[in-house]
Length: 147
Image (cartoon, rainbow, N blue to C red; front, side, top):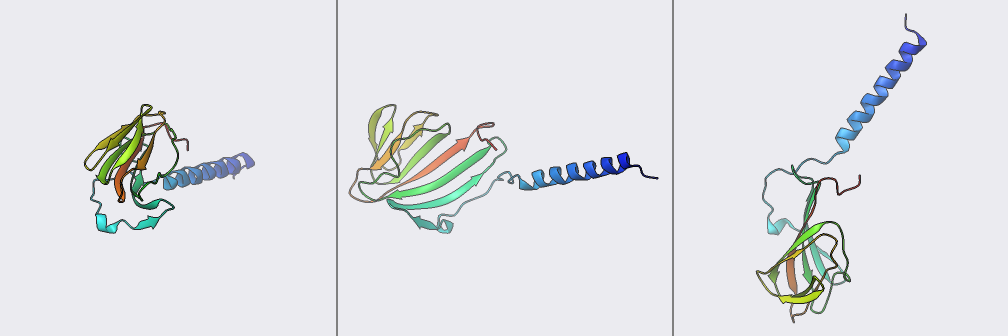
């Protein structure tokens, strides 16, 4: 015969199992090796040009890897100077940009790479006469994301 204590323990065990299953199901899948075809990136218009999202996912060694491609119209910035804990790489595909790096404005063109360190104010602006396109790679090291 089941006692009230037995029924309470069974209910508690079932509730804990349900919570554990929900937590596991809610965690995003770890990114596996794959390719990302430029033709599959849908451009989304912004006030300053457009943006193509590539991925946002945890990896085996990162809480999150985020990659997107931005195209800025001449004279535009995506946002004012800012800072954040994540580190970023910008790979310039085309055009001429001016980046705020360690308090100095640096002008670079196609093929150039900009690294922005954690918690350092930075910005980027298209200073050319044609659109500027660059790839942004940002990562969140383990423990940086608050879930």
